[in-house]
Amino acid sequence: MRSGFVGLVATGGMALAGCAQKSTEIAPHYVSPLQYQSFSCRQITEEAQRVSGQASRLTGVQDKKAQDDAVATGVALVLFWPAAFFVRGNGENAGELARLKGELDALEQASIRKNCGIEFRKAPPAG
Image (tube, rainbow, N blue to C red; front, side, top):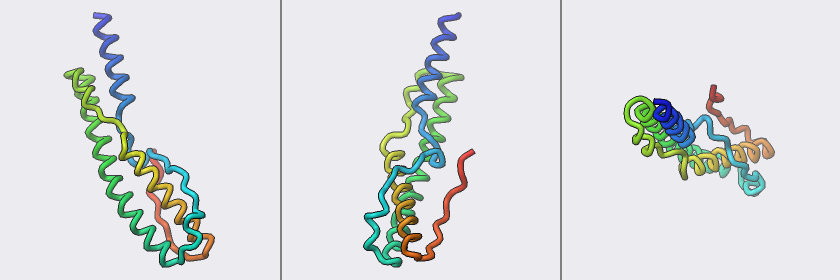
C-alpha cells in the first residue's frame, strides 16, 4: 500500500513539473530596443501590430496546452497514472511567446523614446 502511494506521489510530481504554463505566467525575454531606433513611429506601430497578432495567436495555443496538461494531470493523479506521459509541458511555443513579449516591450520602449504616443495595452498580471 505504501509503495503504491509513493508511486502515485512521484507520478504526480513528474506530471506537475511537466505541465505547460498559462500564457500569463510566461515572462518576456529581453529584446534590445536599439534594433528599432531607426524605425519611424508608423513603422513601430506596424511592427507592434504584427508582433501583437503573433503573440495573440501563440497565447491561445499556450493556454490550450496548459488546459490540456491540467486535464491529463488530473486524470493521471485520480484515475490512470500512465496518462502522466501525455503531459506535454511548455516546449517551443512558450519560448516563442516569451520572445514576442520581449519584442513588444522593446517596441514600447522605442515608441516612448521617440514620443510616438502609441498606447500599448498589456494583459493584467497573473494571480
